[in-house]
Image (cartoon, rainbow, N blue to C red; front, side, top):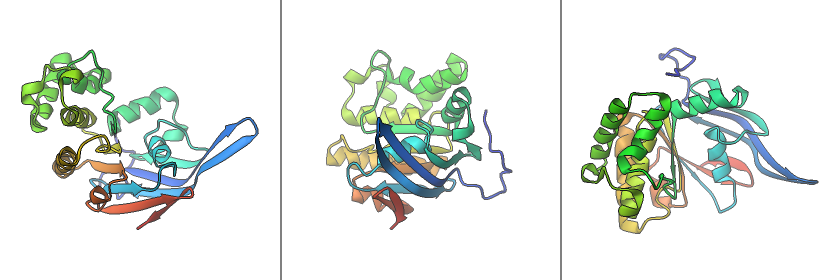
Amino acid sequence: MITMTLPPESQAPVIDCRHLAKTYTEGSLAVEVLTDVSLRVEAAEKVAIVGSSGSGKSTLLHLLGGLDIASAGQVLVNGSDMGALKDAKRGKLRNHALGFIYQFHHLLPEFSALENVAMPLLVQGIAPSEAMQSATTLLDRVGLAARLRHKPTELSGGERQRVAIARALITQPAAVLADEPTGNLDRKTAAQVQDLMLNLNEEMHTSLVIVTHDLDLATRMDKVYHLEDGRLLEQ
């Protein structure tokens, strides 16, 4: 298990993003998406990042999660510099310390809800029986005890997103990064999923970073940041 490099009594943030910049180049064309972005996410803190389409919100989330590497600056997760790690170690840190939720659930269609949720634990090398028991417990917590054996095509949109939330939380990560997690749901189902995420955030003390267009959801966070012209400003 990967642990923090600093003692638990310290005030080190779960995610510490320092002077981050990202530029994409294609031939002679360079597009600067992010410019000097800094962000601290404390333990159990809820953070929303809002901004117009194309403002770089998803890019920022990918950098925070180690799915992409910054052109400049640092992203520290539990005190470890994501950009300084080799791919294997970065992947291991990501698997242990972070959970991901997307607008589209990205569940594996050939596997049941139970198998999808257990997958991150299996990747960690946890015994299958233990992984399945943990997944069963968490699926029960998100209200899907009766749907364990159902595959994604047999679940409603809200149910699929609940499975995705359970999968993101199964490793008890330090933080969950969510990209428009309710953007593909109707208003009623979106409200239910929002409530579920916030309740689990409180119960499990997992930090939550949400990229969203939903201002109602954003106002329920501890902090709201606006991304515009590549810069991040707290509202």
